[in-house]
Each structure stands twice: as C-alpha cells, then as structure tokens.
Amino acid sequence: MSQDADRILPVRGDDEGGRGNRLQMFFNSLPGIFSSDMAIDLGTANTLVYVKGRGVILSEPSVVAVKKDLRRGPRVVAVGIDAKKMLGRTPDNIEAIRPMKDGVIADFEVTEVMLKHFIFRIHRRRFLVKPRIIICVPSGITQVEMKAVKDAAKSAGARQVYLVQEPIAAAVGANLPITEPRSSMIVDIGGGTTEVAVISMSDIVYSKSLRVAGDKIDNAIIRYLKQKYSLLIGERTAEMVKMSIGSAAPEKEERILEVKGRDLIAGIPKIVALRSGEVREAIAEPVQEILETVKVALEQTPPELASDIVDNGIVLTGGGSLLRNLDELIRRETGLPVVLADDPLSTVVMGSGKIFENFDVLKQVLIQ
Image 1 (cartoon, helix red, strand yellow):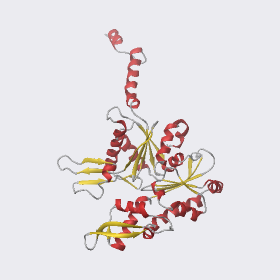
Image 2: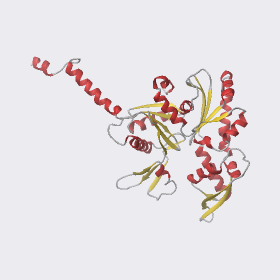
Image 3: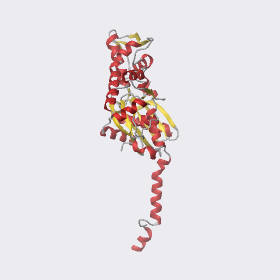
Image 4: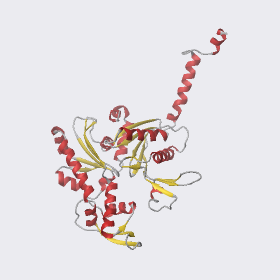
C-alpha cells in the first residue's frame, strides 16, 4: 500500500511536483502576459490612461450615467464623454454621476464600474485581463482614501496597484530633475484639488493639497449669476463660461458672452450678456486661495531650496492652469518665473507612464 502510494503521489521537489508548480505559475502569469501595464490619472473632472509602450490613449470625463430600474436594479447606460453630455439633461430615471470628488472616491461602486469600462476599452476583452496599474492620488490623501482607490482598482481587475502622489507624477511628466539634490516647485490645478509641492531627491520636501480647483471656480460662476441676475445655469455652462471668457487677471480688451439659463423669478428661459470682468470678479475668491497656497509653500521652503526656485521658477500643470492669465497673476504676485507645462492636461498621467517605462529607476517615488 505504501509502495503504491509512493509511486502515485509525487513528493515535494520531484519532477512531477516541479512540473505541476511550473504549470500553476504559468497559468497564474497568463493574465499578465495578455495585459498591458497602465497608468491612470483618476481625476475629479477627467480620467486619463497611459498604456506602457503606447502613450496616452484615453482621456474621458469622469462621469457615469446610471438608469434606475426597480426590477433589475441600477444599469449603466453611458460612461465618459457620452455620460457628460447628459449632465443636467437626464429624465428622473437616469442620473449622471461624477464618482470622484475633491480628487478622491466619493462613490466606490460607480468608480469601479468606470475603471472596468476604461480597462475593457483598452484591452477589448473581459477575460485574461489583469494589468498592473499606477494610479495618481492627491498628496493629502488619507490611508482610508488610499485603500478605497486600491480596492476599486483591484475590483475592476487590476493584478497589482501602485500609488503615486500627483505632484511627483506631474514633476516627472514635466521633465523636472526630481532625482537631483535641487528643488523643483510644481503647482498642479485639477478639477477637485490644487497640489502645490516642492520636490528634491525623489521626494516631497513640502506639499499642500488644497480642495479648491476647477470645480470650485465653476461653482463660483454659478453662484454669481444666481445672485446678480437670478439666472440658474448648470455645471457644463459654467465650465464653458470659464473657458470662454474667464480670466485670473485684467485683460486689455473686455469680452462679452451670451449665457443661457433659467430665470429663477419668472421660471422661464433667459439670456444674459456676461462680461469677462464680471467673471473675473466671480472667481476672485477661489483664485486667491490658490495664490495664497503658493505663497505659503514658498515661505515654508528651506532657504537653500528656495534659491533653486528663484532660478528654475514655478511649473503649472493641470487643466485648471489653463485659466487665462493665471500664470501672469502668480508671476506678478511672487516675483518668480512661472512656466506652463507643454501639455498641462496630460502632464500627470505622462509622468506616471514614465515611471512604468523606467520602473527600476523611478519605483522609489511610489507610495510605499
């Protein structure tokens, strides 16, 4: 009996056992073979995806449209651009949701659905897809919020999840010399947060994550029109106003834009001729908060590193940095050179992608 058992059952380390272990390892590695490493800038306003070896291949609004069904439960009807078109335009049974708020996850399940959708869009299949993913997070993120990001990515199909702070990723994407013993200052203005950081030797010397950015500027425009003109507009219209005639500092020529909304008193559609000076007045408070955060960062920077910033200047990234004359305002108020990144919208995700492309050298910048 024991001789038969010895003949049939392989012991640990023999040829058959080793072959079995190798087969198991091979099957475990299959999802990695058929998956592409991805870097994701999971932003409040937009989600961008970088695929190793291919560059940035996806940039979509962080919006999911969900249809309520009493019998079958909630059903996703659109994600990204198609869902954003529905903001403020949906019937009662469809809700357009922005699952990210202030740079962190506000709705876990919807974020998971959004990530699954984008991963599927890239790989074009649902099976044997287990990519390694780097996700950018605000520098002020809590442990609980970090766990939520990791869990959402793993539930969406990630094999392994790494996190990197947005200012670090932005600095890498802007080609700043972060590994050297000299400082670089980055100001990343997104949809939900403004990240101000001083970086030296692959680490953050000083950082401040301010939950005032593009969304707060949009909300300021909505409030202004509501208070001054009794005109109610939606998020998309406010964003359009900001991009069309918004400015952080006075301009030589004043521009006028016709803004359509609903009259809060009469309850009917109404058009207001809005001047660019009024928009500047409306957004002055959030813009000033961003400016003060930059000034505080400069005050908190050690003297030796501050001298580097005098030479190298401040680099602006993120969609919010495209606000007209914002760089001029910061330059005037700080007396320092201010440079706008080549492609502010994709600087963060490009930096995250570069970390994957040079993983052995740059993996030290990831959150441990």
